[in-house]
Length: 355
Image (cartoon, rainbow, N blue to C red; front, side, top):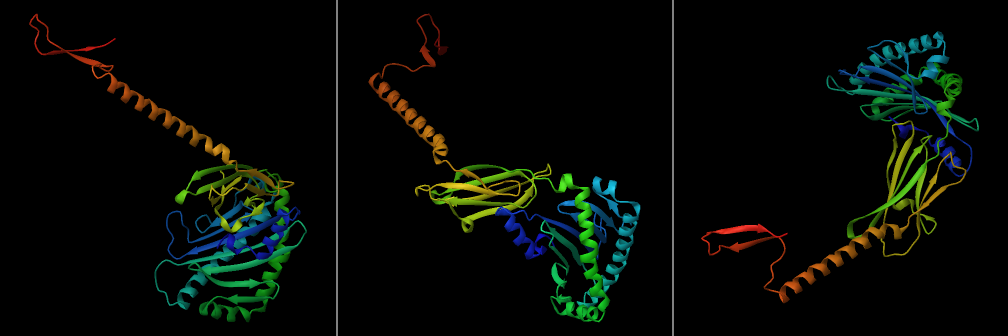
């Protein structure tokens, strides 16, 4: 249960934004987690609310109270709002308690660790189009999904089909979810965006840096690090002679930088013997046009060339010393010299350092 649940329609909007449009996506998410075997730091039920990437509230079966997690939400929402959230959190808690027992019976499970995860939410785009959804899972597998447009539940397996038939008989459930997604979720999202606009609606430009390193089979790995950007969505692509090589690139995803912004890395392997122009292209909402950073192979070769020249000079010096020693076999080198005892009766040998 996570980013993969974001609807495909949202991706289309964001793709338009990266091509120069102004269709920014904002979202409200509420995550529910229920476990059969709670432990320290893992309550049997928790409910966490997000607006975009900011936690706005949370509730656990241990605290028994919804607590605001952002200053701008705590300062702007009145006590009635938090009482309403607390009322629904406790209703969900009771409902999930019964649901966990029902699911264990459906799948003939008497013991062991089991988990229910559910996500509800809505998306709002700058063109005022909206999207809402509900989806849950049991033990990490999809269970039921609600489609608002068709007003139907979609079951993922036999156990979910049993639940679906029961819910199909309760027509009021459809209207409940439709009202929630259209009449509650979107208005709450709009008000939250206004409260936290300095954080949620800010735009921070990314910085990009390219580098290279030797790889296997005499190939070179090009790396493009992009950091310091907000919001999270970004497209980073390696170009070869101006053409995208998206299928040849690798990325470990977008990660928090720790300061409220994000960072990402995109790499690609090339054959340095093939002459071509490579550049890293960055598309982000904060940029009026794509940012392009070229890879300069000449810069990367300077340390290598310098190392080769140093090695050649060193070898030349060593060969010169060997030839000189062969031509002057009677001369001792610098350092310590062993001198034999003299006629005055000194025995053994003395070690003296040459000045």
